[in-house]
Image (cartoon, rainbow over all chains, first blue to last red; front, side):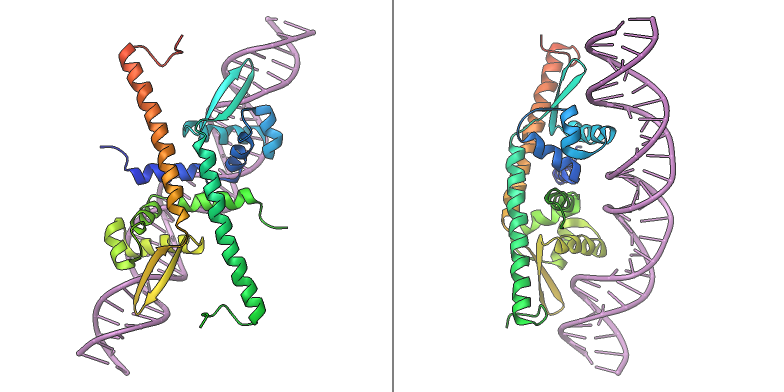
Length: 116
Length: 116
DNA sequence: TGGTCATTTGCCGGATTCATCAATTGATTA
DNA sequence: TAATCAATTGATGAATCCGGCAAATGACCA
């Protein structure tokens, strides 16, 4: 018996569910980066960053390349950027909708009642 | 000043990071469903299901339609299914890779050393 | 009005995740 | 070899999430 698919999917999304990890991926969108560069770009403490990188590494989202004492990270599967793009579109759509409701409310001066 | 984008994205993915919530979305892929049907299809207790629905409702991922004492849920933005599809492709790619490494190891009888 | 069904909310102990600090490892150089 | 730099690991308290039960709400029927 193996892990059901929906559980694997849930773990996958859980791995993406942290602001620092999203930031890391967005920096890696421009290609491979050494940890020393990620520290200032992501803006968290080195050990904390390393933990977040470890989580994504174990989830196979990123891969590692060592050169001497330096460690370079990159995204394993470019499809991941497509995923982030779709996510962005969904969020944008949701926020736009909210924004429009807000404007309607301000225009009518009434509460968010039905549009009847 | 408002919430940074990467934080919004992280919350979005966090909302997807739970097996029951993934299951709910997969059931809703075939269209609107009343809670009474979701209970057996998702396979969790009513109150627990309701909490998960509430989380996704507050995140605007699903929307509600009430008819008498019954409540029908559906996915707000169909793009969400596209997202799940991309996620599936990423996971499949990752598992395929792992599978291939495994086969190589079994064929050679050695550990996962470099391919030199 | 009282009772029942569908769904939601409140509450709570247990488990997991987060973020910080100190200590460790591994490579490089004096 | 000792000192130093890059990165990781371990430990820990605080915060958050999970999942179950009991109670509440709201619509419908007798």
